[in-house]
Amino acid sequence: MASLQPEEPLQDLLSVSLLDLEGTPSAFRSRSASVSSTGSGGRLQLRQRVAQLMACVEDVSSDDEIHEEVSRTIDEAFLICGKMQKQKLQGIRLHLVTWNVGTASPPPDVTSLLQLNLQDREMDMYVIGLQEVNSKIVNFLSDMAFDDPWSIFFMNVLSPLSYVKISSIRMQGLLLLVFAKQPHVPFIRDIQSQYTRTGLYGYWGNKGGVTTRMSVYGHTVCFLNCHLPAHMENAGQRLDDFERILEMQQFEGEKIPNVLDHDILFWFGDLNFRIEDYGLHFIRESINNSRFSLLWEKDQLNMAKKKEPILQEFMEGPLKFKPTYKFDLYSNDYDTRGQKTLFWFNGKKRKPAWTDRILWRVKHLLQLASEAGEMPEEEAISVSLHSYISHMSYGISDHKPVTGTFELEMKPLPPVPLVRLHPVGNWDAEQDATVRYSTAPEFPSSAWDWIGLYKVTFRHANDYVMYAWVQDNEISSEEDAKQVYLSAEELPATGGEFLLGYYSNTMQSLVGISQPFQIQPRRMLAEKDLAWDGVSRMQEQLCDEKPPCDF
Image (cartoon, rainbow, N blue to C red; front, side, top):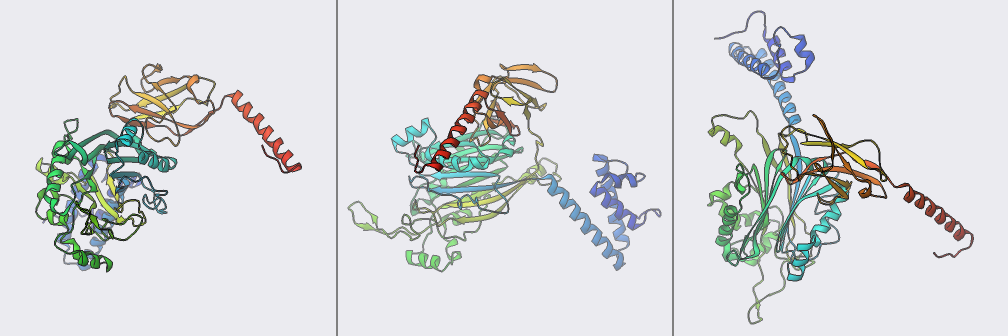
């Protein structure tokens, strides 16, 4: 049995091992004779000492007092490792919305829907999937030329809070929007979108799926918003259409050719699965008594997950909210109106169902690494569900919206932005301005890259005040940085607070954003403003002396 050397008693070994874990410089210096290296050499030495420790535990296992001391020390080591691991991870709070809006216009307020009133922590990303957005021919043609009313609505809500729309895709009534907080935008790259029609045998887009995929801090994430066939008897068709969408959606690039190849896949939408076997009265009584668990086993999606291997890879939170379909408009009452039939007689009322769902799938990174013959030292990415709820206060549609709030923890593979940029000197609207930027060695620059000047509350990458091509407007190039000029003629005359963004044509995203800075307005304009302020004050004085006064 191996044992410690006499000059290294148990307490010293435990002390050194913990200092190795904490990695403080002073600790290493104080024990330079035994621990003299960091990095891979230090890790190897730490593993050797842990092996020695395990051998020591075998030798002293009969001594209860020492055994307890060893246990406490090992617990402490685990705590230190856990803290260090947490420090390495990038946390992303993601809020996902799915809502069949039934061709309605946006509601007056979405504070509760987007959880904007939370005090503990704001969201890092919003993903909003809508179904049955108004797609009548006049509306659809207008929306193709301009942003649709729902996109404009959510941008108006989120851009003042420093959220940027990084992606949107529309297929008739299906709409998928992705927003991110400004600091995260440079780390969201390689954005691509796809759509698949399944209505009328694939020729019509009233049913199907729209997808946006991206790299978030170096990890691939995909969002799939679906509207699957309706009616109780079409459960099989819903599964067939879902598999067709997965097969049809292909992306450019060798590493991530299709939807299932992503590290994380979120699947959500009006999936239209119903509750089988039970009658209308039993279902409503179960809902009224909040006995939702009685209905879970007859939910078609839950039933399919027991049989279909592809569905068994997806996870979903517990359905602890009322079925979200079908409601009377502007009401929390389930479908009191009779269904119209061909000869205008009232048919059966629709049975309530959990048609609106959010599921997710995490790729088995550990399993893949094991098959390749190597095991990663730590889990690269994880997903945890914080809330899965419906929002009963919204009545514009016969569906209630459903939201899921997730925490994504990942090791950030690119620790810094690919491009760093900042304004040179103080800017005013009467002089040409200069931007200085530097790029990471691996950055794939292009002749089509550009730098945009944005208001601090900009909505999306194309919402710039002005832009300049980085190559055409280059005025100096050094080994570590380049400079680009912006013409004074295009600078905003009124001045204000702005920021700069570097757009990569290769990655189709903003890969660098500067800190906010001020642009001084043109002096002539500023003098006019001062003169007008003086006139306004004189008018106010006259009004005070001789009321009433109307200008």
